[in-house]
Length: 161
Image 1 (cartoon, rainbow, N blue to C red):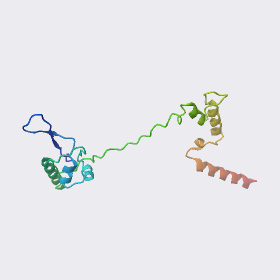
Image 2 (image 1 turned 30 degrees about the horizontal axis):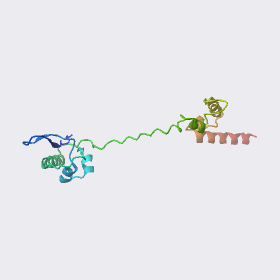
Image 3 (image 1 turned 180 degrees about the horizontal axis):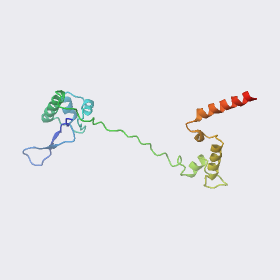
Image 4 (image 1 turned 90 degrees about the vertical axis):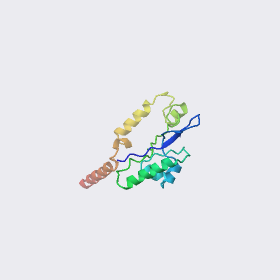
């Protein structure tokens, strides 16, 4: 694998004189376009891109062009793409939706005059519905199979009579 080239940037100095160079975060958009690539192509080739830089140093453009020629001549594979991985995280719902306020508990049916702040009555009712197979959790993934089996059994019983 051919390693991605490193961008060089000038180090700011207080004194006038010879400029010092160091490795930068990535190539500027101007340098990438001067080398004949777009930003998306550069990222697919594994070239680091620094969107914040505005300078386009000829030194970096020459480094990029030389690296591209080496890559095209068969010097190796390019590194992995440098696209950011997107991770989506669901936001926490509001306090009322989670049942953390009186209004939220009331909306979810967790408040009752006789039971106070408990939800035991609701749990018992759900457990009974599961036992009688009225709730969807009892038939998770087997909904259609159980319905079809029930219909088949009913028709067999009718045919016996």
